[in-house]
Image (cartoon, rainbow, N blue to C red; front, side, top):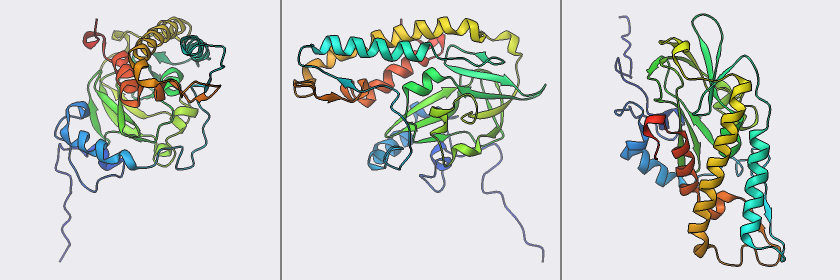
Length: 279
């Protein structure tokens, strides 16, 4: 008798991103990958708080946001302002490779041939969200709409959705990221790409930028984030106390001051599609 095979995934259904990340054995997505509205995602993230970060697991990566050293002669406002200025100036001035189209949600797209393109995130986003512990993607082949999530960057208990710059079918995901997600931080334009896509809309219809044009967007978004981070620091200041900067102590980064949840919330606010951004 010939054995009968059955597909464990029903036709038209997709894996949950936490299944791809290796944290659950089996779970189907019933929310079209809108993880930010999924109660299961919220539970997994809350229970996942005790897992090791990429740094704890031994990933070697330099701090993208430099440590802040507070001298006794300076006040905390001066230190924070200087650190924000230095960090964002360095990020926004980095080189942008040619032969790619860049998008305001800090993704890039590069054609491979007439039918496929590769998608990744730019160095601006890669620097800010470092270190990434793991990357989750839809199971190919999966159709994603324009501005729908095409990948998720997992860092500790928080998840950041990367939104597709173009509608199309996800036909391949980067296999190198399964065991080395930090490539997204260290090499976002080459070995740290996210997915390959078969576009279903003309790229000419999308608002995108050449490398020479995108530097202005980076400068504008650097100033936006700087302003939002500093405003949140001012709101958080009563909770900080003096021990963090008294007598020349080290303040690791802005994220530790305002908290990871608020840090990711501010970044997500910047990355929302234009129609969904807060005024």
